[in-house]
Length: 350
Image (cartoon, rainbow, N blue to C red; front, top):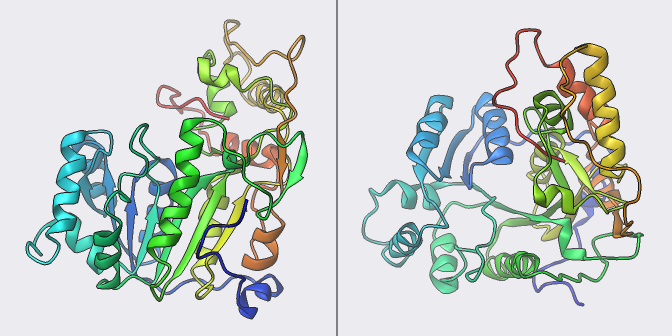
């Protein structure tokens, strides 16, 4: 399958990026569409560097949390039909109500990070009005755009190593919508003078969302998580390294490129959970309840899937992973815990 229209070879400066540490981008105005786990992490780092950061979230409670961090936040629940049509009403009338918060952010932002997943039966909620969205962006201050996608678009590759030039093979409806969103965003900005990137992320983990958090809470795996236990290989990435990749891409001009953002070790989840348990048991003896359910390591059906290469990420963006394997990533999360930490708000993850 051919690459989406708008994907171009990097300019010479991109290929040379690995020879030196990526420069820090000059502070601008970042708009995060979908300020979830990754969006919030990136926003906090940018705020600390003097950026203005705006973002959308799905509830008034989350809006208050983001505002307390220093963000300009607004509520936009893409799964709500009311919010969906209201948002496009703003796009259709972008030239009239300039006082509206959502619209001002869209026009004023110099950088746009898109982290809203496709909606079943609809697709990407922001691409349904292609011409109006393109017009709005063309009249904005936008210099950089990044869409956060997933390595799931490659499908089952029989355990082979895959890079960004590998044929995509989305099987499920949600993954097909994800790939359609990749192509849609590249098409929208095809004639615009800005840098654009598609980041295909592995399974995301980080503080509060990791195997050690699952172990500490003695949580059983969800049905969805159990369905992934048959995989022999699992691509994953620490949220700090996603942030690194985002910052590095801001220094590459006019490179409409796709990057796999994964670590070096596509280890199976059973191996990751076994290591996580050993870490928690050593540092916090007695914390783990006997009822904790870990991934089964015996009598499981092995689905080869794929191993995802991050060579382009390192060579073109000059990213040196903070956590090249799950071991350093989980260790850093555990080291950040205080003895008095409460585990009540920790989430289950890869």
